[in-house]
Image 1 (tube, one colour):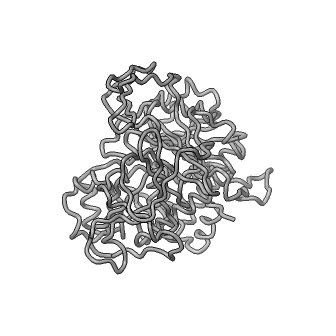
Image 2: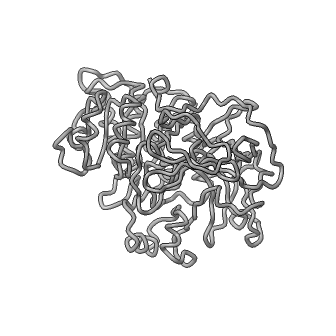
Image 3: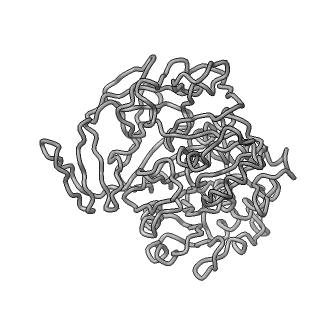
Length: 471
């Protein structure tokens, strides 16, 4: 049975005094475990119990990790919200999941709490707690087994398929950009991960280079950073080094000093750093599957392998999506491969298929680290595409929808940002779950199996309706 917190407990027992989270105020494993216990105790003191949702709108990685593990110790469900989400978007998510607690380091908490009828406590991080309670004060308790309520239970039992994380992502910037754009609620999509999926993400993270220490350059709320970066490193007894908001000079200095073994950065971040080859830190460049050149994405040889050992020299290139995790790597990073031949191969236990849909050819991925359900906001409008597909239509929320030549539909937000209107879908087929991150027109090589879009799509919900899934 997989339980992420139990895995953390085993790691803590073997690494009590080792640093778990680096930074200006390092946290060792013993302290991390103690703080998660007191976070769980703070929830219990306010009558928040297993199955309740805990909303986390945080940039602070240390507070995020304490809150995630603390929530999971009580059997609660942490709900990650991107840092750039506007107050209305945060309020929409909090209301939709009926969150009992909100943990935030944002500065407009009042706008959220005015609409958050379900919230029993707001925990404020790094700011004056005019509304709510400061995190340090929230942690002032005796933990899960406080006097008068001593049960001997310090981790609530959960099954492999119990919900362990809901991570909301920006559908327009699925791999977060440097400038952290404002995220309105209509662009949010929620991805559900059970304990087994998070364990799978950590396994992937351990397979793509050293996890002795990891420099976190992306928002911790992104499931790609949390699972493959922070979770993989910490569960392996390594040191997670969060960098905070992007600052080019500070990031370059940290990379040059080599005080972390590896980092995973976006193409945009890599371009900003200019050169990566001579740095002492292993830099793995993460890109979307949609960026793979035509005909270079292959599927054969993915299953039954013991693992992919990555080259330790030079820059590696990885491909993935928040809904699938990291699932492919460029040919030059595979052990025994010659110089980069341009092909993009799947990591172990990853299968890829193409789906023939009414929107065109679409990629589907089966992976142990994939999301198990996805939910997004429904604006209530009905499809009204013009017959010739040439004219955009205006939706009830003021956005425009246009049908492209390849059959895909793109929504243009009021700020001019284009997003895929369908977003992620998760289909059940042949006893497995296939994640479709909404990527169209990528040509597959190898043993790609095409199938029509007639599979069971019961894992996708068009609205923010989490109540049946969380409670």
